[in-house]
Length: 598
Image 1 (cartoon, rainbow, N blue to C red):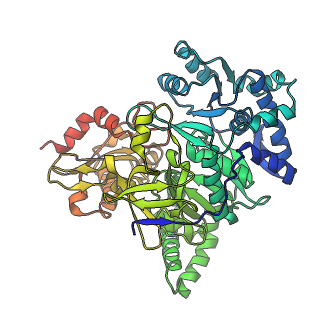
Image 2: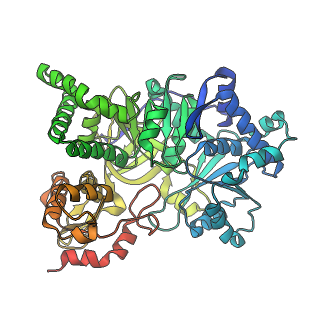
């Protein structure tokens, strides 16, 4: 199939904007908890009425500070309650939010604030403030900088004490559906980040149709979602707006150091994450079972869960024997795993990279279905996703209702719909290249099956061509190798080379466990074990698993275990965990050469 679309389930209001949602919630669901705020280690409910009042209070301060309709205001913070409050406050003041990753360098901060023309910035910490201050001479348009940890919300509230609610509501109404809501800068795997202009219409079309199609996951007063992805990333922003639109209770976590504890106390019904989160949960549970001498039971339970899930997709369903084994393991293993995930959840949504069929079937088999989706900043996050009632594991689902997916002659995935960005800020050349005749050229390669389910097979710009002329899509192999507990990251190499190789980093947490289980020194590291025969054999098993997904000509023939990680600080990965292949190739050129040395 070359093209597939679904009819819209939601009609975008022509004159409205996203601030209408919080006023509607306060009017229709005044006492419903729409957010959870962590105070002194405990979660406290924030009702729709309270949230509207707190947003208005902050918006008044922005208006008093001179923020005008259309002004860009940067927001640099970890994911926390204040992020959501200030995002809606900026919109309520008529402004346009410019999210900045809290990990962004001073140079990146200067580029994003300068390119967007931000007149104000709200940052979280002294460190963030110092970063902005270090480049402030290069930002002549920047007037105000507020710091959340230094009482920014209270300061704004006090400054706007004389502004009335009516004034805020009047200002909030200035933006229409086709006006910019935000400028989200791409992570930038190559070159400088580009500012994607997403309108209020983009978010309405995206979140309205997603919430309607996934209605059982967004029941007001019953469902909740815990957001621990960066709110500066478009996926995190989708969660924020969709939760407010439903509305369901939204909790925000600034870090995942105590994720298990927070899941247990917040008890979300829905979790949004990237594959690495779900891989970690699985690998941690398996490692714990092995440490407790129950590794064989866990492996049998996992095998049963996968078989049970696969059987659910067949006409006859699971056999009687399989159903009995599944019920036994539900009491012994699956229930405990669901408890780790909060105990109330039945669904998760995963994006950013392929989860893989094995884990997809495992989670559905334990009663916690992970629905994979696919999207980009330019498509306001999810442009396809698996519906809750018609999941096809191994795909990224059907198009967002109201949108179209087309496969070009060269296999590139093209998108069309109201949810798309309107262009790159201050970059008409890049806009013209990406948007042609209303179609966004994603740069991803994919296929559509007979039911309109999309499978992504690689990136056009990342296709390697070996010396023998074989085209290789790295993502297919990398994702399978990375699923192994010992592997942190994997980058396939081989462009213009006689065969395909791979650079592999080790997961430090699981390396410590592996070393202990295999009688290695307690202070063992990747540097001391990179030539260890047992470790190399274990990594080879991960590579063999990756090779099983491709032809012999595309398979990894040799690999190198690296002594250090790919890090965001070193520029190897983006804040959304995408590899910057050119940077990795440059920094580890000697290791790549070692793969091909005779």
